[in-house]
Amino acid sequence: MPAIDRGLRRLRLWLWAVVALVASALAAATLGLWPRGVDGGDDPAADYASTFGGPFSLVDPQGRRVTDATLKGKPFALFFGFTHCPDVCPTTLQSMARLRRKLGADGDRFNIVFVSVDPERDTPAEIGTYLSMFDTPIIGLTGTPAELARIVEAYHVYYQRVPIEGGDYVVDHTATVFLMDAQGRFFSTLAYEEGETARLAKLRRLVQR
Ligand code: NI
Image (cartoon, rainbow, N blue to C red):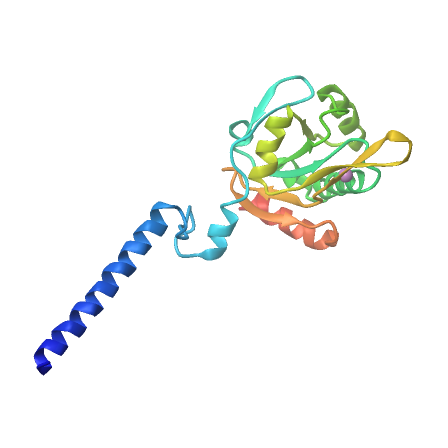
């Protein structure tokens, strides 16, 4: 085979390889396999953050509908739990109330939102009674299992009923507090193990941004 033919043949093979590559990239993008930024452009951290939060619709203790749109305009700290919780929920809510007081004048620049993931026992009214013990305004929400499934999916949290002795049950649940900005976008988290100094610093950044 003359050298020029071999060269053309190699070029043709190479071009086919490019075509195949482009075609598979297009197919991947069409199928949603290609990583696409939502808000973050080229920042992978921002892409990751944009996957927390989103639309939801629940009810408060007065039976009013509260959605992600209702909460817009003010940052919020969102937490999942149940009113019969023996430790994580009361500890977290007490801590949030204390942190709000420590923020002083900035304390009312964010909402505290508690979502009950125990719809069988926690009626909206009972959630209201429970939250009134914490001495600070907390928006208590719950909904139907389908409505709860939606927000649980949006925040990538976990909850599971766990039977205990005597036919009763507790609800195992994610203990993370999600800090969302005034536009409902993910800002940061407060971990259960995190010290109050770190928690306060994050809350301060949330309300002062
Ligand atoms: Ni709890």
